[in-house]
Image (cartoon, rainbow, N blue to C red; front, side, top):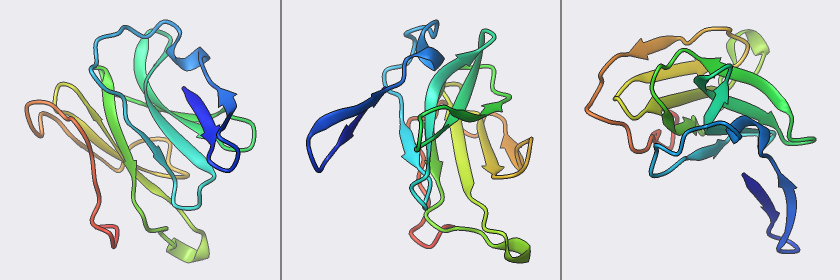
Length: 134
C-alpha cells in the first residue's frame, strides 16, 4: 500500500507488512478512510495466516486493530460517512466484505462485529453507504 500526498504528489508512506504473505487471489482490494480522516481500513491483509482487514493510524501508519472473523480473502471495506455518537463518545462504523459473499459490520471500540451476514450474495466486489450513513 502506497500513500501519496496530493499537495506535493510525493509518496508519504509505504505499508507492506500486512500484505507480505497474502495470496494474490483477489482482483481488487478496496481501502476506506474513516470520516474523521484519522484511520485507514485496508483489506487483503493476513494475520497468522488468516484474512483480516486492518485499521491503520494515519499519524504513523501502524496497525490500530485487526478486524478478524472472515475465512475468505477480504476485498472491500467502507466506513460510514457519518460519525455515531452514543453517550457523547464519537464512534465510527465500517463494513467489510469477502469474495465468498460474507459481510461484517464493525463499530469502533467493539472487539467483535455488530452483525455478520453469511452468504449475503455470491461475492462482494465493493461496499457503499447512503450519504447519510444508512
